[in-house]
Length: 195
Ligand code: GRF
Image (tube, rainbow, N blue to C red; front, side, top):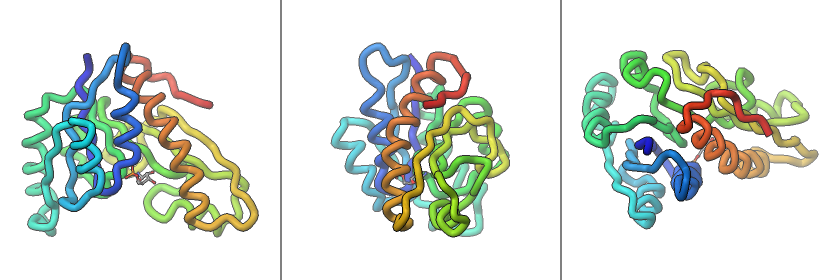
């Protein structure tokens, strides 16, 4: 049974989708939900599901990324993870941290990578007049939002769409894509998941 640690910073809707999927004959189980944000709404949702949680507030380490990551590593290592899932985790991780989990750390990004790495993906797709948008699950490598793609899901951009309506449409796909990719990845299959 693969042990999965999920890192969040906010509401944790992707974390909830992942945890709900890890049942029955699924080859993985969540062992820890960890947040850099003490007020993250996802912490209460994880507790409601009976999943252990931890918080490492990044604020005391302002400017000391290595110090923050050294602290972050403590609950992660204690949980003995096989796989790390970043799910709405909003801190950039150093290459040193990423290398420790090379080949076993996933992230979900709300765009069709390689388009729109970084922030404000929906606003950028709308501004560009794109016909479609979507989300990508990828392996995390030192370069931001640039690792091997493990799955993508596409949604149409509709006339009158706002950042909020597009984000909601993409988020619904994220909640389907990420669990599908994790299940396949946890079974040792790295073939990309496409709809
Ligand atoms: C989502 O848009 C996800 O793509 C991004 O963070 C946002 C919030 O995710 N990574 P969640 O509701 O906290 O899972």
